[in-house]
Each structure stands twice: as structure tokens, then as C-alpha cells.
Length: 588
Image (cartoon, rainbow, N blue to C red):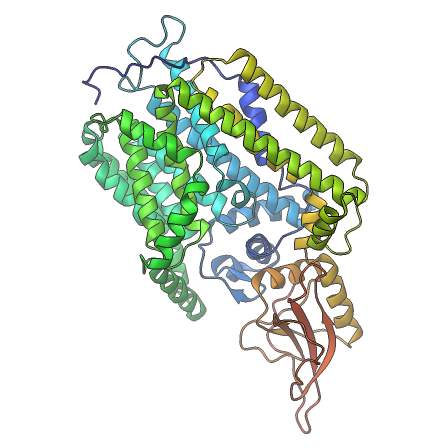
């Protein structure tokens, strides 16, 4: 608490991390993965499909998220509203997919900005400041900046975030709302009304993004804060009133609009059922998944966060510690309430966990700092060598066994124009070596030092994968070529204006990709169509597909990288005395 003596830090100093350096690391972390690729299966293409349907569709598509007529009730509409609004405004400049990717990239950038400012506001408080911040060399602002910079590095170094933050799903937006909530709570210590309203807006945004579970967890944190921290006791009631008011005002309009129509009520019923199912745990599956996944998913944040909790024992009432710890516990508990384990449930706790770790970094002993550094140097150097070795084998065919394994990832892939990727990869590797040399030779005693190499190693690995290996990953995960084949078969089979295509067992990613690349007129549920697209994921056999009564098989295709994923296109045969009529169609 603020009445206690300031914390004493003796090992690390609060030297400034250059602004250009931090911004460069953030850019290298965020941008690769959004540039130069198609929508990827599975979650990436499905999330893009929801935003694309809104961009091409009508008001009902914005009110009831769907993928070309197939309802999507396991996410709220807010992140797709943002992506679709930006995409519709800028698709002429970027194209549909790139415009949506830019919107998601902007959301990820907001998450980083909110996280930094939340931690900066908390670290400026007297109770967090050291008794003698390294003589006269570090002011309160410099120390707070060092803590905030460290927290951002911890967040970007967290292993589990890397892939999921670069997909066009609701997850980057949910991370941004968690960071916004923490920022609002930090602001409430000085301005309860404004901070409470910001926190309430984040709760409403969470409800409209990933459902009631995350919103409820944040509300529990808001209620518990005054009991955990004396500083929040002084502002708790006013903060809570404004938070609840803002949350209700922003969250209620969407469900109320759904209640105005029968399709809207059906969609709301499905969304509520999904919310109930998502909170039906804990189960042995969710607990087991968490125990197996959390240690690597939250690395390297969780060991430092546990150390922080230990070192701040007896002073857990400090707002920086209480807020981060309560939010982490609430969001982890929410993850355990899911009936099945999934990375999406683990993601939100990454932000408060990184904040708690940042508060503990100044107290790390030199031996622990060196251990973290050398683990990062060893693991990421070896990982980058592996990335380069397998890429060289793929390009040259030597060694043969490595080349064979890599070519199995994307059969038929022909590398073209790799000069630019090679130059970028060499530059990134050289930058990593310079960073390691700087760290080893100078050993700067800064607060953010333990996380520089960990974050830099994550950025290096991701950058190499998204430059050298991007064409391979794109070939493996795209439906572009298959969509062209399907469209050609549809046109050659006598497609007419007003025709629609019904589907059986077609996954969301494939449906979204066919809708994007081939602009196929998929049917809305219950429509009667002349065309039927079937996905058959059974093991490949020499037997012909089972014949369907009154249907003619016109086309069969699969992606080269997946022999078990097969698509079949049928056309309805004319029935005696009955003429097939087009059904309701979701027009591209």
C-alpha cells in the first residue's frame, strides 16, 4: 500500500529503452504474418469469411454474423464490425483480404498501446517506485517507462500469443479489450468516472467479442479490487457505477436489435446457448489441457510473475500487483470453466500476467537474469539455424532426407523469386547476432534487459518463418487453386443466373475461401438448390463416391497438401414432373 515504505530495487537500473528501438520491435512483431498471404485454414479463413460477408452483404449480415449464409454464433459481432467497416472503406486501395488484415493489425497495435499505458500509469505510483531509484539518474517517469517497456517486451515474448495474434479472428480484439480494461482501472485511481467508463466499455466490448465468460471475469475483477487494494477502496464505488453504466449502454443495443425479428431471435438463442456451453466446465479435459499447455503457452511470463508474487508478498495491495494478479486469476479461472481446452481461452490472461511479470523484473537476481538470457540465446539461435537448414534443404534438395520431409508439407510447391526473402532473412539473422553480442559484451544493468533477448528471439523466429517459409505455408494452407477449379466446374456444368449451392459438411474455412476466391452463390439454410457441394474427409480409397439419388457428380477435387480433404460438386438431375427452382441465395 502507499503508506508502506517504497520498494527497494538493487540489481537492475531504469535506463531508457530507445523509443525507436521499441517501436521497431513492435513493428517487426506485428506486421509479418499479415502481408503477402491468402486466408489460411482453419480459424484464419473462417474469421475472414465473417468480415467478408459483412463487407459484401446487407444490414442483416452485420446484425447476425455468418459466412455466406451459414450462421456463426460462437463469437460476437464487434471485431468483425471493425474489420468489415475498415475493409469496406479501404478495399479499393488494399483489396478485400488485405484491408481486413490491416484492420486486425491495427487492433493488435491498440492492444500493445493499451497494455503499455496501463502499466505506465500503475508504475508511476509512489508505492511501486524504489526508495532510491538508482541515485539521481532515474526519475519517477523514467522508472515507470522502464517498467512499461519491460511489460511490453514480456507480452510480445509470450510464446502462445504469436500465431493467434496474426490471424483474422476475434482474438486480437479480445486482447485489446483486456488491455483497455486494465488501462481503465489504472486511470480510475486518479479519475474514477473516466476510468470506470473505460473499464465498462472494455467489459461491453468483451461481451460483444468472446461472450459472457470474459465479460463476467472482468466484472468480478472490478468488484474485487476494493477488497484487495486500499487504493481502489477510495474510488471503488464511483468506478463501479460508471463501469456498469457504460457496459450496459454499449452492450444492450445489439441483443435488443436481434429481438426485433424471428431470425434475430434465433441467432440470439444460438449465441446464448454457446455462452452457456462455454461456461459448463471445468472438466478433466479442460484442466488437463491447461496443465499441459500453460507452461509453454505463457513462457517466459509465468516464472517471472510467480517470482513477483513472492517478492511482493505482504504488499499485494499495491494497485499494480493487485490489479494484475486479480485479472490473471479471474481469466485463468474463466479458461478452466470451458468444457474443452483451447488456446483461445488462454489468450486473455497473457496481458495481466505480463504486467505482473514486469513489476517483478526489477527484483530479479543476477543469476536468474543470466539464466533467462542464456536460455533465450541458446534456444532461439538453434531454432533459427533449424529454420535456415530446412529452408536450404527445400530449395537445393540437400540433404535429401530433410528436403523430402519439407516437400511433403507442400507437394508440388515450386520456389520462385526468393531473393527478397533471403535478403530479409539474412538481415534479421545479422540483427539477432548483433543483439546477442551487445548483450554479452556490455551486460547493461537495465530493468528491461532480461526480456530483450527473449522478445528479440521470438521476433527473429517469427520474421524468418514469415519471410523464408511464407510461400510454403501459403501453399499448404490456401484454397486459392482449388477455388479456381471449383468455379470452372460450376460454370462448365451449366450454371444459370439465380442458381444457388447447398453444402454438406463443408467447414467454415473452406466455405469462406470459396466465397472469397470463387464468389460462389452459397445458399442460406433451408434453400432448395440445383447444386450441392459436399466435403468428404474420409481416408482416400479407389472406390467411387457413393451415388446420390437425383444428383449427378460433376467435379471432385482436393488440395495437394491434404489427401483426406475432398470436395464433391453435384448438380440436381431433373425429376419427372417436377422442375427444380432456385432457392434463397447469399449473393456474392
